[in-house]
Amino acid sequence: MKVLLADKNHPLLKTQLENLGCVCEEDDTSNKIEIEAKIKQYQGIVIRSRFDIDKQFIDKATNLKFIARVGAGLESIDVEYAKQKGIELISAPEGNRNAVGEHALGMILSLFNNLKKADLEIRNGKWLREDNRGLELEGKTIGIIGYGNMGKSFAKKLKGFDVNVICYDILDNVGDENCKQVTLNELQEKTDVLSLHTPFNELSHNMVNTKFIRNFKKQFFLINTARGSAVVTDDLVKALKTNKILGACLDVLEYEKLSFENLFENETLPKAFSYLIKSNKTVLSPHIAGWTVESKIKLAQTIVNKVEEKFFSKSLKKSKSEFTKVTGIGGLFFKTENPDMLKKWYKKHLGFNTDDWGCTFWWKDSNEKKASTQWSPFKSDTDYFSPSKKEFMFNYRVADLKKLLAQLKKEGVTNVGKIEEYDYGKFAWILDPDGNKIELWEPLDTAFLN
Image (tube, rainbow, N blue to C red; front, side, top):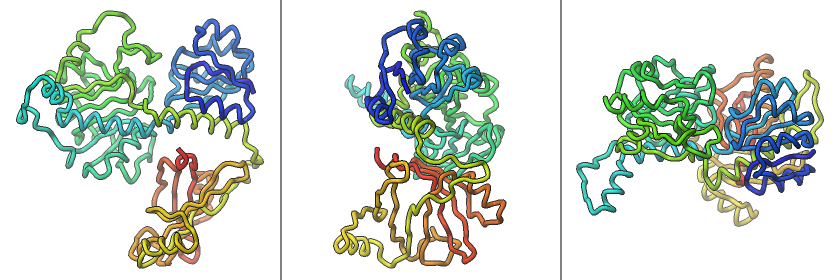
């Protein structure tokens, strides 16, 4: 498979695609017209945001099997037309979700504690303690709109701050142990801090406008690490001036070009932006929420993993009536009076490489990918095995958790709780006829390797 790398990315992307058998060619300097002239030579293209892939481009890409964007969204691609042409679309929201969650948290903590203002004052010889008295997150309600990869990451980061986290999403049943899903009306009634994590689409375009803001019962703070087009800046500034919005953390602006590489479509400085850059009520950053050293690696790795899964998997394809269920043992968990003592014993006498969680054993699956099995002793009073009364619990690796749970539900198997999703995979729990609690894990082993 011949692949064009049309943007600069982490070198592991090229190396690992070539290890799969791809022939990779790099061209991050030619313009769109020049790329269009040769795109028919390639079966795959990897982009970031340098140019749009529209209908005209796709028509010239007569041999294209996939378009991979090293980022969270696909707004620079004519998605529907690409699908009509049978082109696989690949993105990597898993790759920078952790970075976005941390950035959103960092911005609101900076705003609450006047860190930008205080830092500048100190540098100018001012020591103003009372003027910089801050706020605390504890006890506040954080409202999240858009509860996908980024929203879930932010909610996870908020654990430990003793806040109430609620979310609104157009999809049903997306809430989890970190966040309660509510209606938009309830979110607008209770929110103290609003964080946007919506994709670029018609529903999110200009979503935060004067009417939307007025529907909030309380004064609130705004965080936007999603897309600048979600917020009407003129309306935001009006709300900041009247204190309906008490402060804003903006990693994105509606003035950005779609390439994200430049700020303005023209050289005229908008009046509303002039207010934002002078105000102490704002914290601004140049679309870098997902732009970390680690996310650059994770984004590239996620693209490689998805290309491999879709085009290079060695596993046999199952019929629709048959699919792989359990693929291996993911973990052995058991109760003990003294987990730390036991871990030390196993480390000393049997050479276990133990850590806080126990010991991770690495092996390779049928596709020669690294896979892991966890050995973990738990305190005897743990409720993690509940409602089972047994002294142990097995974790089984599964290929497709949601599909398996749907099948088990039809077969009358008892589910315990809801699916929980983390950076290292998805989890669910069932009971067998003997009352043993079984943990089912759809793993993402690469999360342990980054």
